[in-house]
Image (cartoon, rainbow, N blue to C red):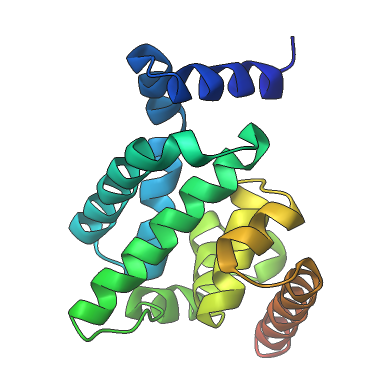
Length: 180
């Protein structure tokens, strides 16, 4: 059986009230969800809380999921909305970190970029592009899943990914041209 088929079986069992199946889904997705929330809010505790709240909501509403293949998009969407809600309540907006700016100033050529430099480049993207890049490249969600998470059409996701790649390319070229 494929990994996706196994996951669909777990989801179906969890919908039927199987606590072990739900726990297996939790173990599989929770670390990625916390990382995704952190990418949005830049606060470890808030990210953990947002992911936990999303799991609680998902546990209550899982029976209403008619297509098991959309579970991944649904849980990421729940985390995104919960994180944004928490930021709104604190009257904060997601923003790139100062660390990202410091790492961008590193003297190494970006042709041989470290993971910190790549992270800094991605962190410098606008919020919505950064989220699309994260979900597509790091979490390997499909375009239709990302569209569901971000509540926009799939074509918009394609545009955002293209724009993000273009911005990253421009930043890399700018760094290379600025180095002797």
